[in-house]
Image 1 (cartoon, rainbow, N blue to C red):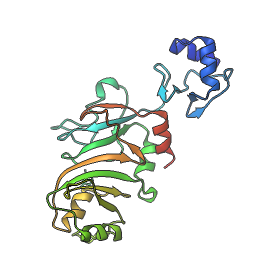
Image 2 (cartoon, rainbow, N blue to C red):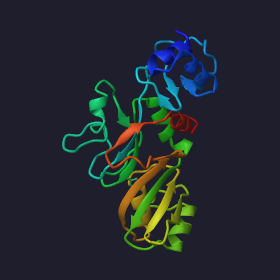
Image 3 (cartoon, protein in one colour):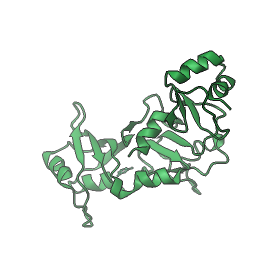
Length: 236
Ligand code: URA
């Protein structure tokens, strides 16, 4: 079917409004901006207008930004606890979703849920060094030793050498800091601060690979990634 016809059937725009939207570059088909109204679109195409995927356009994979609440585990299934996948499962009964990267049960913030194993692998591969940004509340003020140690690469208590990371104060409170990691190791931030005798009272992931957690999402809320956010992650 022609793209302008496809659009007007699914959006309620007239054919000429659809053509205008297309020529202005507002329409993305399978991840690529398409400016030609007569482009043939397959039934299976993923079409988005202004970054919002069209309802009813087939999506090969699902990509969800979730604001994980405290007490929920980063897993697909768990015998005892609510999982991040449980929070969205009612809307995706036939999708095998999983979290691309984990947060501790006590941590909050951005978890990416998807069924795209390729993207998850790329985001998690140690060699790709995808940045993750966290807001952390410590039980003691940030010190210069922590900052220089993080920048050089902390050696954990068990001898594991961490890659260089950044830690900087966030505002007035000396116990609230922003940490940027370029790798993902189990309990990494807690263990890195532990080397300096500091405990972590709260840990919130704010961004993954340059994509920020949407501040409109309350704990437990989620939405699909926009086309731009997905492209940003795919380019990592
Ligand atoms: N580092 C931690 O210690 N915990 C998390 O949840 C994420 C990073």
